Image 1 (cartoon, helix red, strand yellow):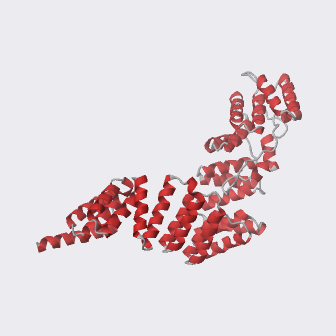
Image 2: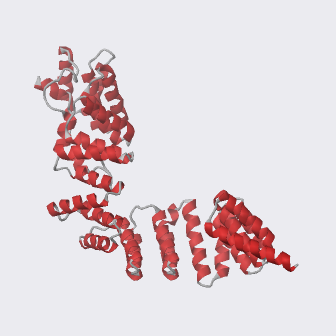
Image 3: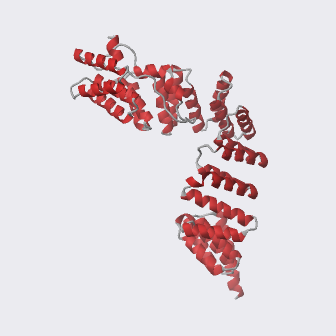
Length: 455
C-alpha cells in the first residue's frame, strides 16, 4: 500500500525563481521540507478523498517511477499514452506532478483539473492544483482550490500559509489574517506565516499589534531583515517618525537598505526638516539603480521642488534622465519635463522653461499642466490673447478643466474683466466646488458690483 501511494507523489522539491519582495512567499517556503511533504503527501489512502487504482494501473505507475528517475520526459510520454477517460484519476495526478517538475504549469494545472473531474473529492489534487495556480499568479482560483482542500480535511500549515498569501494578494486582509494565524499554529517556525500576519496587521492599520508582534520576533531573531523593515513602516504608521528613522538606520548599518528603503528614509528626514540628510538618501536610492517604478524617483524630484530645493531637484532630474530615459513611458517623460520647466521658472530662467513647455505641448497636445503653465507665462508677459488661448485649450481637457478655469479667471481679474472672471469661476465651482474658490468668487462679485456702481 505504501508503494502505491508513493507512486502518486513523484515530484521533488521545487522553488520559485526571481526576486521575492516582502509581500511574496519566500524561496524558503517552497523549499522547506514541510512544503515538500505537503505537496508529495503521505503514505496510505483515505478512500473518501483518494481514488482507487487497479492492478494494471499499479504496474503503469511502477513503470513511470522507474523511467522518471533518469528519463522524466520519457516517463511523461509513456504516461500520457496510458491515460483516457476511463483511467484512474491517480494517473492524471501523477502526470500533473511530472508536468510540474518540468515547469509546464499550464499542462500541470489541466491534468490536476482532469483528476478532480474524475474524482471530485480528490483532496490532494485540489491542494496541488492550488499551489500550481499560485505559481501562475491566479490567486482567486488558487484560494478556491486550497480552501476546498481544507474543507475536504487538509490540515497542514503550508496550505494555510499559501491560502493566506492568496487572500492577502487579493486584499482580503481579514481572511488572510485568519489563514496566517492557522498557519502559525500548525507550522510555528515558518517566517512566511509570521511575515504574512505582520503584513495583514499593517494593511489594516493595527500598528500597535504589529509593533508588539515585531518586537517579539526581533527578540528571537535580532538580525531579521523583514522585521526591521516592517518595524520602520509600523512606527511611521504610528507617526513616530524619529523612531522609524532609527529603525531604518539600524537596517542601513546592517547593509540591507534597498532603494525603496532609502527613499523612505529620505522622506523621513524630509519630514524632520533634515534636508541635507534627506537628499543624501535620495541620491543613494537612485545610485543603486534597482528595479523601482520610475514614478517613485519622479515623486522624489517633486518633493525637492516643493520644499524649494531647486538645485537638488534639477540634479535629481538629470540623474533620472541619465539612468532611465530609455525606458520612459509618455507619462514619465511629461512629468520630468514639467518638473524641469518648474525648476527653470523658479530659478529665473523663464525662456528656457517656456522652450521646454512648448516642446512638451507640441509632442503631447493634451498636456494640460504644461498648457496652464504656458498660459501663466503669457499672462506674466501681458500677452492676454495668447494666455486666453492656452487656458481655453487646457479647459477642454477634463482632468485640468477646473484648474484652467480658475487660472484664466485670475488673469481676467488682473485685466479687470470681472464679469467674465465671475462666469468662469461659477463654471469651475459647478464642476468641483471648493471653499477657497467660493470665497474668491464672492470677492470678485463684490468688485463687479463696485465697478457697476461707479459707472
